Image 1: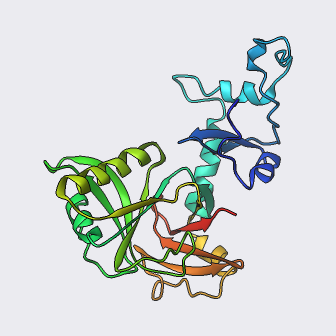
Image 2: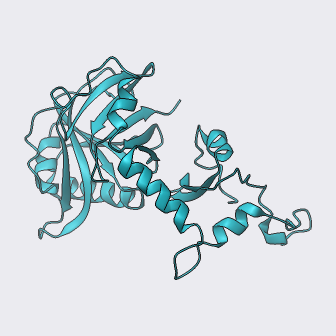
Length: 264
């Protein structure tokens, strides 16, 4: 908690008021689960190690997160169950901003993508592909999503570049490893590519569940129906007045969309 302001969240105050209990991923803070009432985070007291920061006599937030350290189900397991059911039956919002976000471009970007990723990377622009990242022996290094792009308007979520490019989303804990593996293979083959790290410039909000489309359609004039926005595709849209890259994906077994948003 002493470093919690390093990678903050623009909606932290709203989440705290809703009872969010946070967790850290890849240096970013995100909601882990929600308590029944707000539990404010007190200033970090270094466990009373210094005279000028005496330990808090009562720290409800610390008491809550301490209950996670068990080999059994935590005492708040029933709360997490309710959140899972809400996603399965209605909709839920996941803050995935801790995920790595990269653009692979350059004259040899296609060669690098064809070599590193196991799926077919010759698909048309607008395709989003869930794929493995492989090493030279064909072993799996990671799983991630790759979106085939063309140059855009010059924003962080729609950058300008020549030729075909690839927007890559990795798990937060493997972001730097994935980036270094791609660059290593490019150097080994002598390919000319540019791998631009946009992790700190972009937020990633995932709206999942059977009601996700109904909720989001109220915020945009863009048609989100299957016919115009099929599964495993992406496009730039305006949602609630903000330009962003929308990806039609799901990792919960239900309807869902991911939104790549510029961090203001």
